[in-house]
Amino acid sequence: MVAYLGDVHVLSLEDGRALELGERTKGGTKNETRYGTIGTDPVVVKIQRAHGRLRDEEAALAFLTAAGVRVPRVVAAGTTPTGEPFLVITRESGTRTNTPEGWWRFGRDLACLLDVSTDTCPFPRITATEFTADHRERLDLVRPLLAPSLAAEIDEAIAVISGTDHLVVTHGDPGSGNYLDSGNDDEPGVLLDWETASVSPQGIDLGRAVFIGLMDLGRSGIPDQLTAALVRGYTARAAVAARLDSAHLRAWTTIAGLQFIHGRFTQPLVPERTPKVAARVLETYLANAR
Image (cartoon, rainbow, N blue to C red; front, top):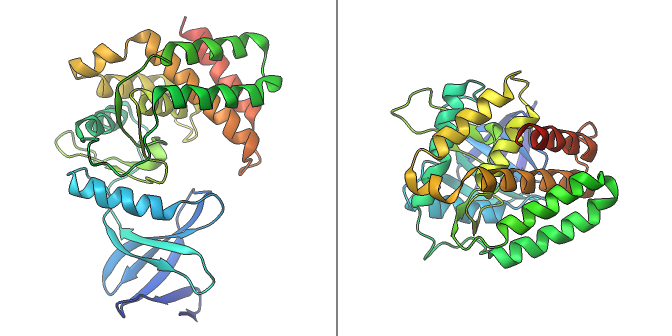
C-alpha cells in the first residue's frame, strides 16, 4: 500500500521493507523517476508511465550485472496499488558530464558492451535485414516532412548499413543523460536506462550517442568537441575501428537522426523538441561531414 506523509510517499515492498519516495529527478518522459530510501540505503525508484518498459529494464540490469557491466543493481520490483509497474535500483555515484574528457570515458565505457556475449543474452534480437526494413518504414512515414536532399541522404545511409552482419549488445539510447561519469580514467562510469536494450547491428549505439551529442541537449556549447572525444573513446580498439570507418559512422549517425525525427513525430512528448529541430541538426551534420 501507499501512505502519504506530507510530500513523501511510503511504499510497502513485498518483503515488508518500507520504501520512502523523495523528490523527482530531472529528465525522463517514459517514467516518473524519484530518489528514495530503504532504511538508510539510497535508491532510485522508477514508476512506469506512457511508453515505459520497466520489466524489460529489470531483465536487462540483471543480465548485465551478471556479465560484469557496471550498471545499477535491481533492489526490488512490483506494481503500485493503482496498477503501475515500478522498479527500485541502486543509486549510483557519478555526474553528467559536458567535458571532452568525460565524453571520451563515455565512449570507452559504451564500447565495453562489445565484450558482452550475445549467446545467452535475453534482449530482443534484431538482424540487419529487420533493422533496415523497419527504418525504411520510418523514413516513408516522415518523408513528407523532409527536404528531398535529406531524404536521399537517409536512403543512402540505410543502404550502407543494410549489409551489416555483426550483432552486438546495444544500449539503444546512449546519451550523456544516461551516463554517470566517474571523473577518473581508471574507474568506469555507469550506463543508465536500459529499457530499449537489444542485440542489434554494431554501430547504432555510437551513431545515436553522436547524434544526441550534436543536439547539445545539455547546452554544453561545444558539441563537436564532445562527439569527437566520444568517437575517439569508442574506437580506441582496433577491432572496433575496423568495423566503423568514417562512411559507416556517417551512416549510423544519419540513421540515429532518422530515429529522432520519427520519434518526435510519432511521440511528441516534449513540445519544444520537434521533428524539424532534429532534421536541422542532421542536415548540419551531413553538410559538415562531407
